[in-house]
Length: 299
Image 1 (cartoon, rainbow, N blue to C red):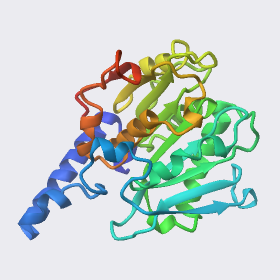
Image 2 (cartoon, rainbow, N blue to C red; image 1 turned 120 degrees about the vertical axis):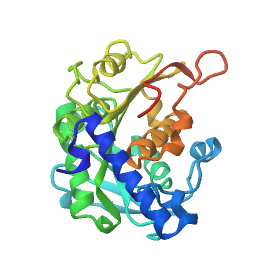
Image 3 (cartoon, rainbow, N blue to C red; image 1 turned 90 degrees about the horizontal axis):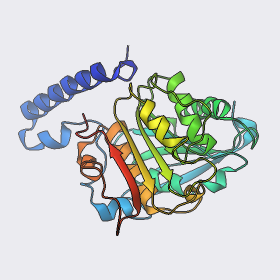
């Protein structure tokens, strides 16, 4: 049994014990480098707010295009990854577009995440009208392809997987996490799903809604999803002030900032990013968020 297949409380305990052991080993071997070696998944320099809000992070990246003829279970895809192998392997993230949409509508987010230290695959679904369950299956197929068959599979740590999706793709992230309990993190962007109960999801789950969303109103989708995630390792809900359902289809600093922070914190176990999530981000006058609910302190 891998660490990522455990229930949340045991998962945190096992990781805490493992990281403590690594810290002790680092101190015994090279005392001055203990803090750097304590978390084997930590990637990149100390984060700053400006750094995670930037269009690109500290890693140079490259992109491979994959034909739909070569992808089992989903459509054509783009894989963006750090070009350097000096830091070892990286967590892998799959991104699904929304209903009637193509990969191009969420393509902006792929290099933004990858440049922070992840291998990211975004894809076209088999049909543009695929439902959340089908998109969940395709998110899993995309993860498997990246890990097992892609040209950059050697750069991926297969034990650190995450899913991101917009609209029905966001609903699909919950489907994927319910089916694969080893997924570490989920980010739903203005998510839509007829199923409102997700207590079976173990993964740390962030739902990002939009205040003026009339297609997947937060009160009917993202908020009920968040409320039902009682089995999640951690959960959070953020709401974009004055935004529509289609906010994730163009470059958006708030979406990128909190998605990156969530993935770093729960895929890389990097507590340096907790500062951007806890205490919960401010809302109201002068903020780009109209609501913020985070299960602080994050375990």
